[in-house]
Image 1: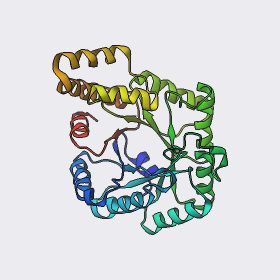
Image 2: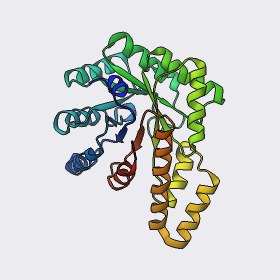
Image 3: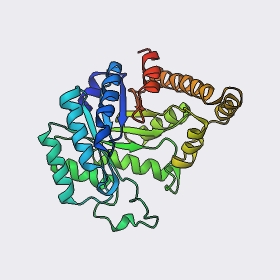
Image 4: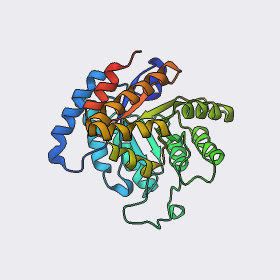
Length: 290
């Protein structure tokens, strides 16, 4: 089924994100996690995609099994990095053969170890190029794009970032999934700014609970998401007084309140980044009121 249609028919909802384990010997444990999280009745689950072909085959196989054996509608990530028309065709035909009709089009990160990677040398330079190609050649596909409530670290300005995401919608993106963030005011303001540009597609907020102080600092360095100062101070104090267990409890409580506020404020749903683990997502999802 097309996720675009599912979103229209069911809101609010929970959706999930998984990444394909490289080692197939741990796939049984991975699918145990998938089954355990089915209790949340996710509208869909996105499956990440390795830049330059790192885990593309795993993405396809896991998405296929998720749909056929576990009853969860998958969205496969698809990046422009390392892509060619032939590679896109091979992957998209395989999706069609597996009766998967959903793609999240991304630019993707440079291949590991290539710090001076030239995106302009690629056949598909941006996610917008991938979106345009899919809509032209595979119109039956439901295509989504990534959004950044806090501007992408490579963007020269907030406005240019908004315009790039708006271009994704103009090229055919039918929904957007956001990068993680911790201040809901940023999300709601972002949605209104997109509407002002003419983009009215559903914008699904991405939520990642902080489970350790180390992970909080890693998040700050990895994607540039800002942790509100008061919250960060509370995490540091919790760690001093109760260690990782206290930080985990505070992080889950914060993420649950954040998700509930987003739903109550009109977000179409919440997208939980699972990190291929069950405990945090179950605690958050089972405490939400729809």
